[in-house]
Length: 91
Image (cartoon, rainbow, N blue to C red; front, top):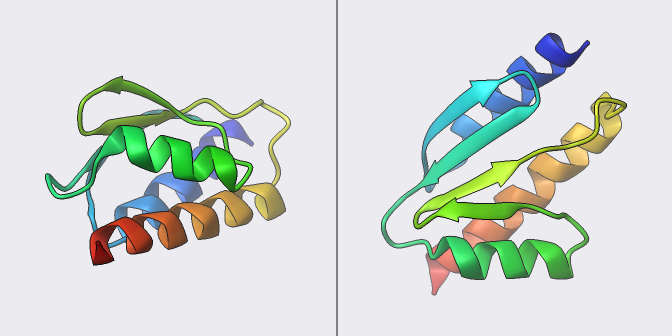
């Protein structure tokens, strides 16, 4: 389940405009962002939306969801990230 859901998350995140790379294994994913997107601001915006991510280095956010994550929660996270990245890209 972790491998399948991780692949789903990685593929969907890679398709978001503003994401330049997705790396990791299983559900532990690093998301490299376009230079115009501030990773710290994105993390704060996502926290306001109810999604917890961290910023291990400038230009990268990391997802570490619990292993009990299911497809509905993964899809919600993808939607929240897409919206937040879209808002920051428009600024």
